[in-house]
Image 1 (cartoon, rainbow, N blue to C red):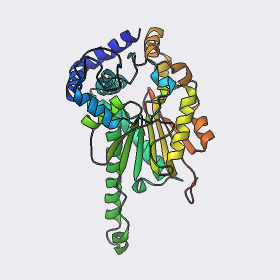
Image 2: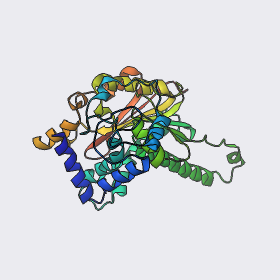
Image 3: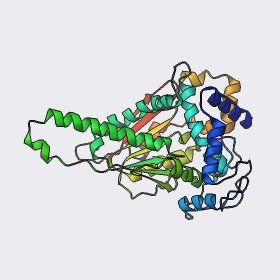
Image 4: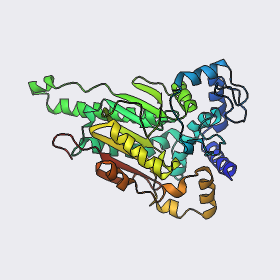
Length: 341
């Protein structure tokens, strides 16, 4: 059944102008992996038809040998016997990400890139509102963003771009409104915006490093439950489309990990399927079964109370919005900033 679910995605992608197979094969070639099926095999990156030295080197460059994989991550999901721990999953993550957008807005004449941007824009605006709202550190003061479960980096790059654009727009407005004041010249410059993409799959990170490299972005091997950044340093921690892939205990631990990484006034952002979505609730049983076949933890995700769990680890100002008819965004602020929550 998982194979059928994937076939539906591939057909949708190709029909909507997303070259699934061509993109996959290009990425496998770029990484030095010969396109072929297969399991994870050895730890040297030589599986799936015999990845060569380039593939092994790319994998080694992003692998932290001290990272321990939780049991849930070693289960098959997304129709891959080895889950995300294989080159095939990493090579198909880009078209799989883009197909989410076009499936969300099927009746709109949007390109795959346009649908991706449409889906994410409301999410990132919710982050900005939380940052600039009561208790938030302020978008202009954010120096570090952590994108948890970054995959191949598409959302990582988009999040940084949105925050930088908002910062630039805000600075222009501020400069225009205070141009007659000499005090404006003494305002401190905002810190450089560094984004760390974190993922448990070194295969995903290797592809992200090759395909989604950008100034100000680094990719790190690590777990959501114990992020590889100094505690209390992040202005934003984002979990984009990952908690539905986790059992309930791991979701709660990931929210605690985000809380630890955030500075006071920092913002948690969770983007994922909306359990209250009428579209999802009305999904035909056959389609739901297909979806569930690739997501082994669906029965734990959908009843999980993300908002209550965020409060339980210490977050305040928890806000949930339906950012489209299928997805929700949950934001929350870490208290402790002077005059804040």
